[in-house]
Length: 277
Image 1 (cartoon, helix red, strand yellow):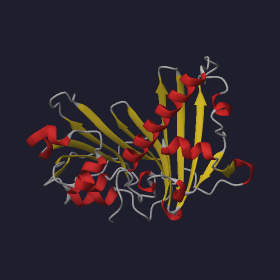
Image 2 (cartoon, helix red, strand yellow):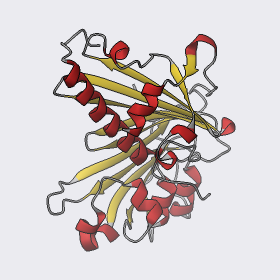
Image 3 (spheres, one colour):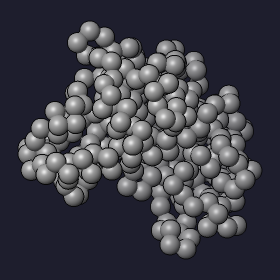
Image 4 (cartoon, one colour):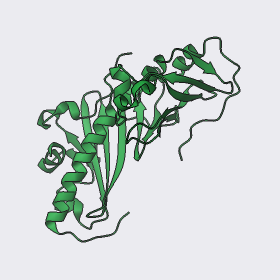
């Protein structure tokens, strides 16, 4: 399916902006330091070699027929975790970011169901920071029309939030290594969907190497893709790194519903100030 890409990249930009705003506010207020506060990637299956490894691997990528599942993406120091519930057209995306001066940690979670959007912020490390910034600890229902750039807000991207299918499709061939392991070479150049999926990587700096980036994928015994690892080579000032996506807990992850009752409130003005910078 065709889907909007780059949710993790969007969240990274939003979280970075929010942390910068919080840091500036905390410094100007002269706050003191207060009290601060296992993934299962599936087992290795014993499947025999497939006749068409690329088709088999693509068929293992989550789609709209799958039950709710968890996911994580790791790119250098960035780690995102979340839940996808295809039946509800819903996703939840979380990130934790630490600020050094002043020292505090911000946890930010977005939940999207169709067009509805909620945000929850957790602040630790500085006493009273929630109250000072007038940010509740509950879910906040956001109005997209009040965001300066609504395109930056998370949306439901479909059942493959890391765009693993787009990456796999760029491979000329995929090799079945047996036991559920597949290898190939992805072409990250001249493909907008793929470049959004690897946001944070300077694809241009890779030059010709961007056209042949090795990857390893693992399919679990239930036939679901459990991991995709891209081995990004070093280029210029960019160090070699791994981009790792994991999909797990199919059918075990919680179904996503709209926050209700005392779990939620309308987002205050301070929340929009935080997001709009």
